Amino acid sequence: MRKKLFAGNWKMNLGPTESRELIAALRADLDRDAATLSRDREVMVAPPFLSIPAAAQALAGSSILLGAQNAHFEEKGAFTGEVSAPMLRYFGVSHVIVGHSERRHIFKEEDELVGKRAAAVAGHRMTPVLCVGETGRERDRGHTTEVVLRQLQFGLAPIGPQDSPRIIVAYEPVWAIGTGRTATPEQAQQVHAAIREALGDRFGKETADAVRILYGGSVTADNIDSLMAKPDIDGALVGGASLRADAFARIVRARIG
Ligand code: 13P
Image (cartoon, rainbow, N blue to C red; front, side, top):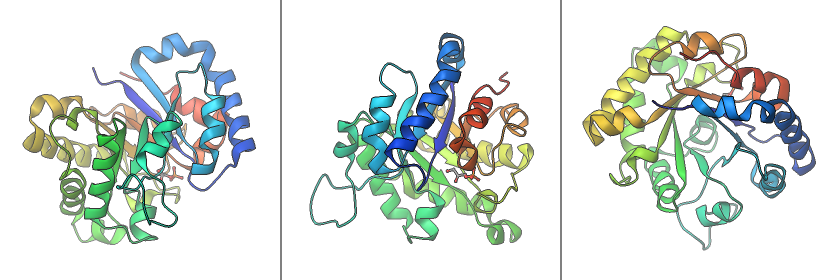
């Protein structure tokens, strides 16, 4: 059984104090059911870099996982403005988002760079959460699968078989991010199934069956249950709705199975 993962991507929101407050509120809600929830699901939050130390402290003793939103592929050096995988690991980060559409589109990160970042994360024994997704234009032109599978192929190119079961893929259609327009569960399922098939071709069926594929893009407490009802949707990467403890906790309590 693949444990579901509900991950909050806080993007460039919440400094250290606000991060502590949100985590405290989230723990007050979720910790009391931790034993039940942890049977079939995991929870993760990915604060901005500067809030990670405070978040790590606030999460002490909790089963909520700590994520980051990016990582450089080198361990150190002349890379102004970047943060490396070992720096994140030092603070207890276990998951790192790579190739988010905002990185790809606003900061022009290309497929190959995303792959190098993913490999560095995996190489430091953390889990890369590789984001893929088509723009509205690409979908309208019928290029969804081609775009998503290309991003997947490049993103995973440097990942060896030893690291492959640990990876997580997040399908985030660009047109659904921050727009209030969610992909329908059927649209998402179709892409997730194509991703799983491609993972099978690359790493074999056993690994493909173990890898979690998250959906992201305007996920809310109102649409999460219908998304989770689909066989290849293994959780959610949540932006806006993860910034409020009550809204995110309701998503974490999604109906499963
Ligand atoms: P929203 O949930 O705000 O649409 O953001 C999704 C996202 O980009 C998560 O990484």
